[in-house]
Length: 451
Image 1 (tube, rainbow, N blue to C red):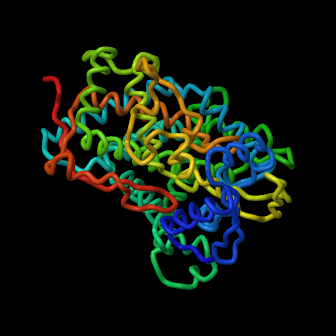
Image 2 (image 1 turned 90 degrees about the vertical axis):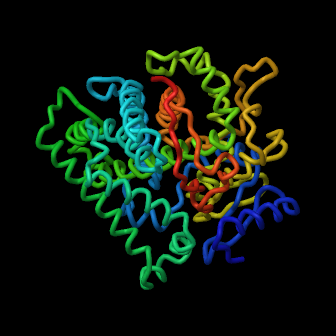
């Protein structure tokens, strides 16, 4: 069976799972693939048998752009060392002068000011949001932010956006199925790789600047911390703290941390324009908890169950990475009585979990009540795993959740969002649907709520 589009893949997988159960073998070109369908199968694999499923598949596109280094597609000791270090740095490192939430608050204020400068004229929010989210990553990784008008910065953001769009295109899917053939054929894949190379050059330039100005006693950001570790372990023959892993891990953080979060916020604005009563209810809750005069904090989330529920439902309904990043059998795996042979690609179909009928009352409708109890208090659902689950879940999950809450609350505190065509003109089905579900682009109107 040769599958080249996500919609066909999902349709056939669901059909087959109804007959043959939630563990299926299909073929993507010559590659054997085991697909796990539904919450129970995905949880059992990624959580209950997590050690067996920590392998990451050698996705050809990512192998090409990272040269096999970095956190995203590594395995074994390389993955363990880089993941432990990155989680510790994201969690504990205060980003120099400020805590992480303070950087996001400041960037949220910059975003609000830039949108206000439009004076109610319709605008496409894609680059404003990309700038804001990417600047959070820049503060973490480089210790600095960039102006929204910096032409070089905007070109880098465009490269990131185009890279994810390419991965979600038919040609991007074909590259991952038939990489050797696609290397010989002309097409967009060569343009995509050239764009990524520009990103690598930018990252290498920033690393060189850090090397020249490094004060080991006072690390400013992720790169400084990595360089310190690199120096400490330079005589360790088994260390994974070396230059190639630094470049590719920073590239991983940029690609994963910019476009997915900014696309989710952009999709959230489309949802709130589509459902103005939900937008109004969120604003009422924000006004009651945050008020007009101060910036939101993460502590506010505990007092804002409806807003929290809407944000969780946005991520569930958007289903941004429906097939997850493939896992890989590093050895023969026994799972539910089946043997998954070594070198088998494994796809935990997150789409099937986020839209599973037995886990959600109305899986195909946008419904914040999925995350509220009878008393209107927030309740989580174990099938809410947009960042995947287990030991290979997204390393930036806590940062992304922080950004989604603080940015959206800041925006709704300042503006009411609409569009010229009205709510009925908004289509929530994605523009692309394969590796990532990317939202459609709209010109929106931001009307200030306070003078």
